[in-house]
Image (cartoon, rainbow over all chains, first blue to last red; front, side, top):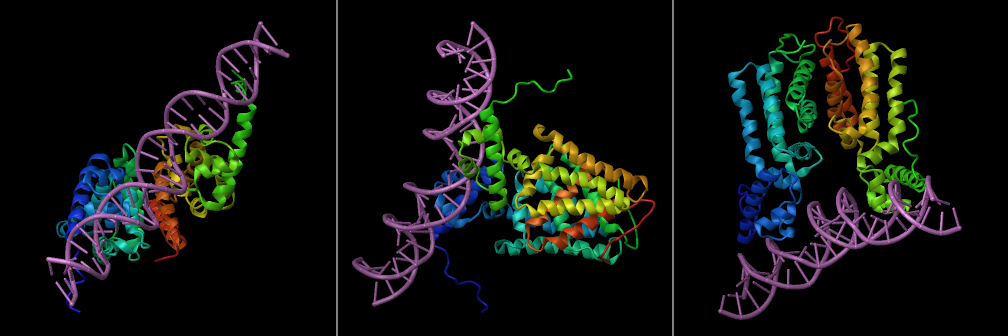
Length: 201
Length: 201
DNA sequence: CAGATTAGCGGAGGAGCCTCCGTTTTACAA
DNA sequence: TTGTAAAACGGAGGCTCCTCCGCTAATCTG
């Protein structure tokens, strides 16, 4: 029971291929965006398209595998922000960074949408990680009563995905910031200690 | 200058084809969802795929043409709600209906996303119509000071599209309602007359 | 080391998207 | 009516997605 180790180590060629594909994916995605042709990636990796699909059954799995590290870093950032900022500032700042990150990767929005959908069994771990980061931020802010006590992770997450939809447009930055502020105010509404850092109004 | 009439009436076969395609589209979309195969629609209409694309250059144009009437009705509903409800209730109710409508049409969300994007020249009219409806609702609510004075159409529209993203999921209704309430509270935040009809909290 | 057992490979193939362009049809004029 | 230019047609073709399955070769067993 203790060994999560021996469910047969993968065959070496498989392991090798997986890494070749991943490398090709990172290269291609960063150059052509996340909607690049998967066949092109397979070609560049020198494997058949079937092989690519066996390793990464959907575009999302491949994209996330390519960027997993960065998303993890984003989650870790939450803890750091909590140490250095007030609870509501930390929350606002983290959301801003998350949205900014998604915006920076052209095509990331729909992929993250799939990843975050609770329907999909495949991404449970990653989802839990993101969930954890946001949960911690929300709890702190609720504890000091700067946001409403019924704020919850799924709703805020969903609201955030609404925000990064906008990031496809030119001139998105301002609107995205306004929307995040609007969201923050929605979260603050009814809280005991109403502190605001809104720019508008 | 007065005659908007004579920029050459379309050829009859073209007119006929347009209508045949539209009928096939309504039938197919309502049965298979808005992501149905366009080639299937062309086939069902008995025209070549080229003909379909000439009449409706994108999936969005076809889908909107098929549902234009219903969207217009939705916009007209805004005026009616304004007569029968208080300004904030009217706003909230209209948003709820809009989201509900989008949710009812599987696949409508991404299409409306394109339609509402200011980038696209094609849908200027329809966009103006929706914009007008929402604008009226917001103005009234601002006037009686139940929502913040800096609330604006593009932001609220964008926030709404965030909400109807959720409608793809099962059990979306509750979350959608919560998100709309959250949005309403964000809009109320800082308003002079704070009236709430939140269910939670 | 030979033989058997699979995990893994890879590409053919069906389906859809969209464009391009040679052919057909229509409307209008002579 | 007949001729003709322009409008409209339609499908072939290039591309991508994704699945399926016969083949290959890595690993295991005796």
